[in-house]
Length: 536
Image 1 (tube, rainbow, N blue to C red):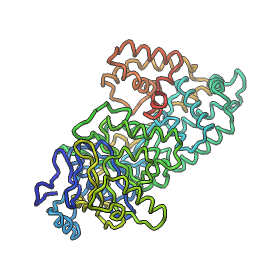
Image 2 (image 1 turned 60 degrees about the vertical axis):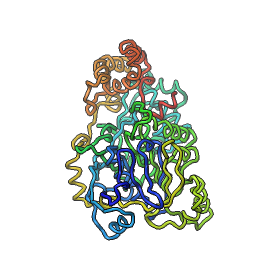
Image 3 (image 1 turned 135 degrees about the horizontal axis):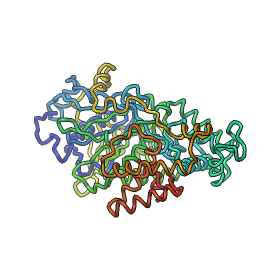
Image 4 (image 1 turned 180 degrees about the horizontal axis):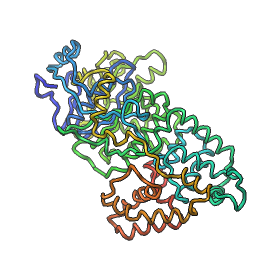
């Protein structure tokens, strides 16, 4: 976007968002303190999101955004000088200059973008229980299953691994197996040692897994698992890549959608080093339809959501929630969202009136504006904005016109999408699923009498891949896509070991591996920040 007023151009320190009596700027150094974009359907939230994403990309900041309706995909194509866009630019003292941004499309179902996968182990029992809508008893049994898998060296990669493991921990489910002749007796005994695991409870979990599979989860769980570093790229011009999650089909399974995005946040929290207060974010994450994250969430999960949102700022990640009403976001999370864009709300019902009042109260008052009244009067493309100022305090709320995006507004064609995917920097990396040897295969061998005892298998696997652990720590292990069971265990052990490397690689590595061989693989496996935070 070129300007007739050079003072309104984006700089290395801030992004121009819109203009009222005063220009509205989003300061990059404060952009990792999170934000909120709200407004009724059709008031311009998606355009505001696109304007912000374009500004971050120009500044070299990678962006991840969920695209619910497909409208955000236009950011990948050159903008069109439509009459209303040119007029809006002229009204703000700007000259419209078309632009486009390097984009990577992702799709959990692998239909309109590169597949996105995670292993069952990485998801962990807490998030998986949320995804399956399990009660406390069922969640307890799922935790038992994960613990048994840890202690028996059974890597949980895909859905069939989890199904096989659940079958294995129920007494008397092996064909012709009874007493000492049961090839899975040690596994069943270990499971019962943690409490009574009943066939009825396991059956309920299995049925919930079937529901999840019918929603497409079989495509999500597996390998090659997503490397979040692939989100954090710049193009050849130094601009941040715009990563778009195609979510139109995913939204038909709202619990899967919300849990998947929460998993991504927790993985970012775990994997990224502390960044303090960087001059600009390392990544900006836009969470559309954010109310789905908080709907019916149990208190334990809400506590962890709040904790991750609060702490991920120090990793240089900015999280921007996009939803219709501010009251969709719990107060304890809302208080952490310093950068606000509020589009129009309509007050037809008592709940609507409450939402308008709540939205008005979250802004720093402007004596020239009746904030609550203005929220109901805003036109399409107008918004009340308040961004953090240099000392980290919210600016006085202002009524502004949002600048028009430089890229196309609206969806792209299937042919344009295919061309972008074919030229993607990650083309071929995730497109073909890999079925590594894991819990399902190991249990089948045990039943057939061809596998080694569990303890020997686990210990041998870890010892065999000790070199791989060291290589991973020092960045020499490049193969994540074709991991055997032992390598998967080694990779997860490495996560816990890596944090201790400075204090003594050899001593701590030996301690972790020795503990694993002694039967405590479970304590070495790390399943994302939420599981880690619970353990802390």
